[in-house]
Length: 229
Image 1 (cartoon, rainbow, N blue to C red):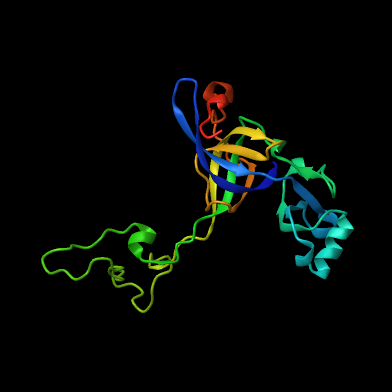
Image 2 (tube, helix red, strand yellow; image 1 turned 135 degrees about the vertical axis):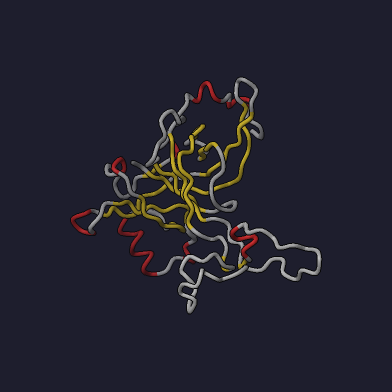
């Protein structure tokens, strides 16, 4: 198991040798600088604290200055913890780069879904719209709250109602890595991933890898014909 932190930059297409086109998500993976190593003996669990994107000196407070000075690295704007058995060999000051994964790997991508504010049940849950003709005045309401006479004094937990829609952690399982480039700091992942453009995502080894999911990339795509290069 291994993980790396990146930013979703958008989507493009790559073309297979048979002429078919596949959509891919471009994830910018800047070097993940290790700022702290957490161990089971001291912290109760094993993890790496990593940072990306250097922070302006004027924006660094006293506590952060001490933390980064102890690690001997430049101040980082974003800090996250990563876990995985394959990360145990890294030490403070090391960097995780895009080549941590390779083409053909099957991964899970964790991000934060787009926030859509306060939404009704039609948009949030896909409920059916009421009749629009014959004098009906009920079109986009939540519908009946009846529950066959049981617990009528309250709303049963789990009732699908209007409310805050989106802006939640979301995980897409079993995505195929098409290409990695440590020099240009990007990873191409087949299909879509959660979140808006420039939102943070974590790429990790798939925990439920499906048999036969990792096809040979050499037969899947011809990256020299990738659109948008």
